[in-house]
Image: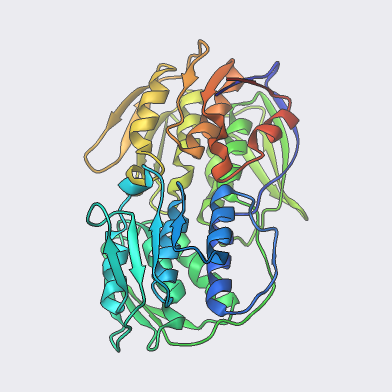
Length: 409
């Protein structure tokens, strides 16, 4: 299936009620399960990943399929490692290419029973009843995935002796670790961090109702739209100024492209400045906010701003290899791309459109970020339903802003 996206003019105005943050929702669901008590989670994300996690946490089946939900797989790996049942955790073909070894190794050192059923270090895995010992000291490479660290932190209070977790090397996506610790604190967990070691004692989660803030990652697509539009006045409801999400850096970052952010009672207002002097080169280290790299890449490509992006170590193990995917798709609109061995990239050129047909690689963020280029002319987006993963109503919300979304099989 393919969506054709077009719009008659480049003036955008309207209000969008953003979906609840998938990252926060998934953490709240795991914490609720670990607490052993039910509590209300308001504005839970309707993302497919979150609905999958919620369903699997309630399931009594022995085979659990997360499909393409990476966060769900990693969080469940840690959660199930403390349960007495034996279960098999699997996923899509792409999920079987995404490593879980560092997390499984750490859990095994704590006494988890984990067996690889196909390729060593990768899904699917079989998780049996644990044999938790007294050892609570662990070290983990912090440069692979913050989700491994978050998974270990959330189960730590339920371990007999808690955990002393040493983070080795450069930490990727630090705000996601901070998010996890802040949410744990909301639910009564005390923790301490000294340099690169996080200490969490054995303790109980407190049952408290919770409200999920909207998703700043989803907001990035509207920031890109505002930057590429001739005029823009957009209200995005559900976002908090005091956010626990690292992607909230967008409010400051997008000033380089003439998008001003005003916080108000219901969310934020985005306005495009009429006269903007764009930077010749936009250089940024995305180590703390890798999920918005695609939106910023499309912003630069649309405006003809040279890009120099670093801190992208995790992009190759996402839903797809996002660096290769960006190179292939931006080439379709004339962008000259170069990569480095350190998973950084740079590109130059201004997007020129002749009804490009964009592939999405089973990656929701590829679909939503590239759709913004429809402001320069009609675009085709293949497999548009991939947005179900994080933002099911994305295409409907684009239509609310005046875009025409035509679907063809």
